[in-house]
Amino acid sequence: MKIAIGCDHGGLEHKNAIAEHLKARGFEVTDLGIYEQVSVDYPDIAVKVCNKITNGEAQLGILICGTGIGMSIAANKVKGIRAAACSEHFSAKYTRLHNNSNVLCLGGRVIGVGTALELVDLFVDTEFEGGRHENRVNKIMNIEK
Image (cartoon, rainbow, N blue to C red):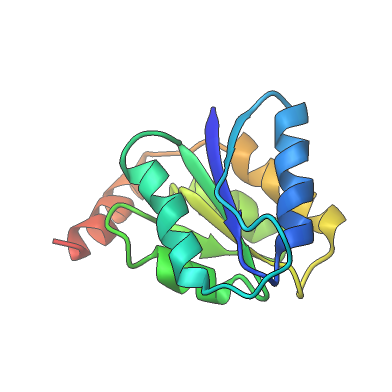
């Protein structure tokens, strides 16, 4: 599986740890920055990661900012993206299982790196359940039209 990842200045440490973790697990990771501790506008990074998903170059995305909220708001403006800001295990699993989310947003100032890695594993290891949830996801996607 190909995963695109990016962060702003609030998530650099987490992004680097997550990218290495995913590579060690055998995933192909595209790191879209940032690469050093400089202030950037998180919507710019969100669009870069989301474009990789919408053009088929990645199946999933991970975005990290201070809280995960700004990244999720920006990501959800991109047609075809279902992004969820998660800070605990249940949501990280069920956003894939029931919502077929394709972007996980995390807060570098909200959770530690260890928890972030656990949430990433839940997110990438969980498959969409389909069934009754498929109709609901389709309704969400129809809102974009």
